[in-house]
Length: 275
Length: 189
Figure 1 (cartoon, rainbow over the protein chains, first blue to last red):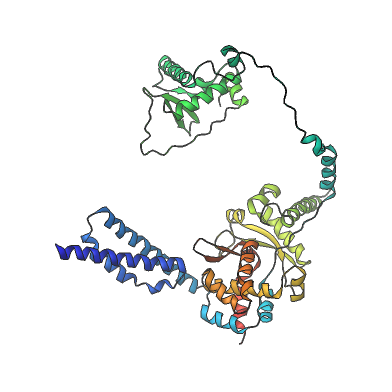
Figure 2 (cartoon, rainbow over the protein chains, first blue to last red; figure 1 turned 180 degrees about the vertical axis):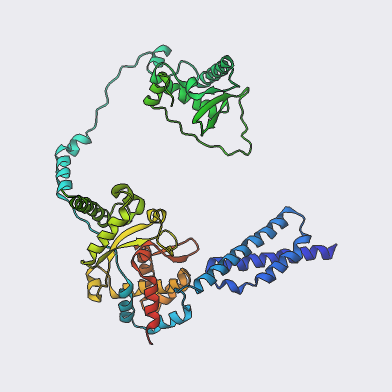
């Protein structure tokens, strides 16, 4: 039992060391052939039957992952050596050290073709700038402090606040729930396999109302009261209410779907034209 | 106007637009992407660039194409050209005297040459410490870091979080990497 534990401990240490070696090759651009891939594979194979707990299996997977990176680097290394750009770094370093600055610069200038760029103001942009300048108010006027107007304190009513759109006539959640009931009702009325065309639901007599309904529909979907079904080939979008609000999304990835509610689209819907 | 005349006028108009786009910086980096040229000049923009390149030859300038990723072995596809970046660069060489006029001191240029050659020989990346060490042979210590930072700022080099230095977009656009290595190796020391 004791020796089994010890063997596991040694195995873990060996894999850690292999990971560190691979990482140093990856990070410090050391010759990837310094790592004996066969040896590391043998090591992984030797200890694999010992691993039972997830942490050990993760360590095993991590070692394989790093080893795969080293093999990729080895392949890149060979590819680079076979290209005309390959040169022995030590030979080049030796040459660079022996050459004087002037010589290096002369060589570099033969291979250097700097980008040509121009910066110049045009007559057109100058005249535009003058026009802008003429129309610009002096700072003293632009930054003038507006004296606070004296307002007499008074009483207001809830109705007045609703009229000024400071308060809503309904609490938002209440409005959203009513909207959900409306969707459920419409779906039942239409009896369309528990779904209704998105535009048939959000479309209203005025464009403003349509936009407001689209805004509310977006919350229905976001808060799990309903879902959208998109048929890209038919270019059709349906909205389906849930029986109960769905709060858990599980492992599903949430996606945002932008839907354009333009005045043209609304007109087409109103006139019953195909979109 | 004859058909030939119309064609000439068509291309001369496009040449002007291409010149403006290539010579005046439109973004943070100079140069224009292929798809931008296609949008302004139409799908025959590679032909417009060829004509422009021919014209620039007289002025010792050229249209340089820098492909996204590896240089295609055969004739590039339209998709590869769309992703590529085009620059107007010098066709010939500058003399050491001219480099001073465009703001480069001999020390700084030698440092850039050494760093570029070293990184090239190390398959495109090298630890910053190694480059610093190499530059310290020829440059005073206090200048080494300033210079490397300057090369990074100009877009010749770039550095990652592990302090590894790579060649950046400007080196790919301006330096003929193969010619540099060949020239350095051909020197008898």
